[in-house]
Length: 97
Image (cartoon, rainbow, N blue to C red; front, side):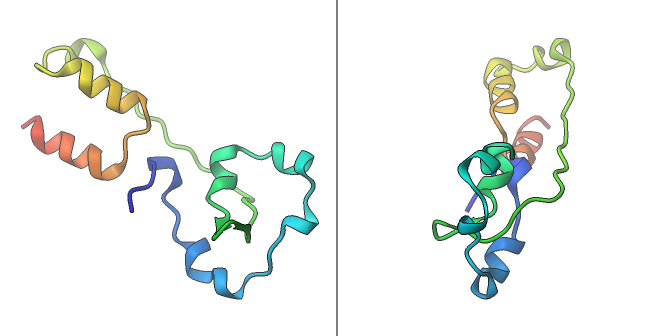
């Protein structure tokens, strides 16, 4: 399964069998205050079993003038701007050699 770079979490799936569903403890309004992407990673088989207490986000900076030197630069930039996964990022690096 490929996850977005910012959503590659394994802990929820690993420990979900011991978790109590948490939906009854949080209103929809409370859940709306949490980042959708972070909250999405807290569901297992359709049930909320975790709550994100911390969110670490990475940022990738690139120089567009350097990217434009590659023959498929528009495709590369589009992938980077649309949640490229680590697997795709590594394949991209190998293809640019």
